[in-house]
Length: 286
Image (cartoon, rainbow, N blue to C red; front, side, top):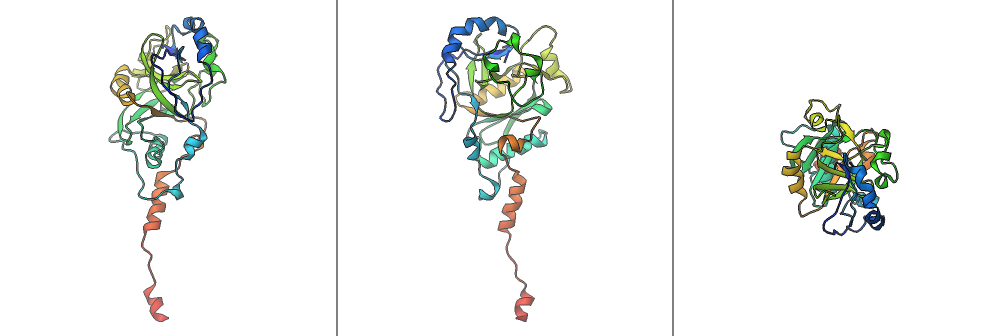
């Protein structure tokens, strides 16, 4: 939320894919954009005053397309992390995305809230890079209803959450012309270069610290290092849509994404492919 984590100005109109819902807010935002401008002068980015970019949480039907373990044939596929160390939940989701093709041939990002990190993958599931991130001040996996329409000055500290979920995302421009990765239109969530923020927040210093304990500070948007955004995020999503998976911190990843364990599927496949043996001595005895 304030780019400074809140409202985006879409330069060129982008159509939304089928299955994603546009709440009819464009006209309202066009009429009220001037009223919103002062509220976003010092924080995150907010919703566009013009046509909405492609963004938003996927429907349950979209996630249902990912095959269940007993419905998948062939050898399991996994994401490639190289030398990067990631949390078990991040590995679980990355492997599931690759094995189930849940990303539907698009690049994807995993936001690991519990460890305040962002991992960027290409469409084939090869990790391109990882970096620390700043996230919403408050713990929680859900956004307050209607928060995307509110001025930042009215958002209480306990409402500053980064929602968990699967989001179809695209690049867009904020009201200052800066590029951001627009994650969710309805709740005004974007992933963007770290911003200065309000005096005393020290966002850049928080990103540089050796601990993730001080990385909760934004209004909900995901702040990443400038070089990381420019070298990895922007190129990965240029000319294409992608998927952002924001891992939960109050629920399980399986509950949020409907994911399955690829290692469990691998064992099932191995069991099905194992040759059956006969007890030759028993056969001879009969």
